[in-house]
Image (tube, rainbow, N blue to C red; front, side):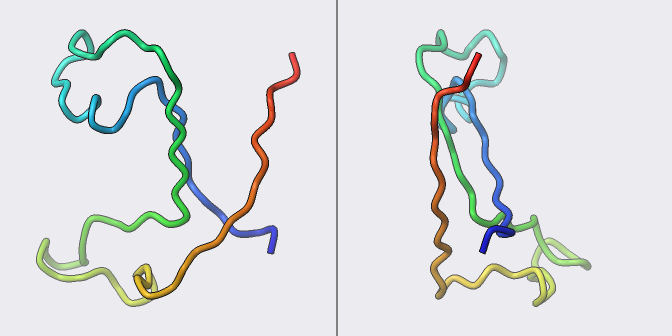
Length: 77
């Protein structure tokens, strides 16, 4: 299928570097690019409290694999 959606981020820092920095000046000098591809993203919780689960239609099944294939190529300037 060609209509499967996914989310991605392309950042000069790892998730750990971003989590550990409380201010921008605490981030190390950028020396790489970190690509994160997410096949699905789950919300923060249910509709009535932090303790309830999300509605069944929005749950991500943990017993099923999500398979994608794509090509990363240099940009043409």
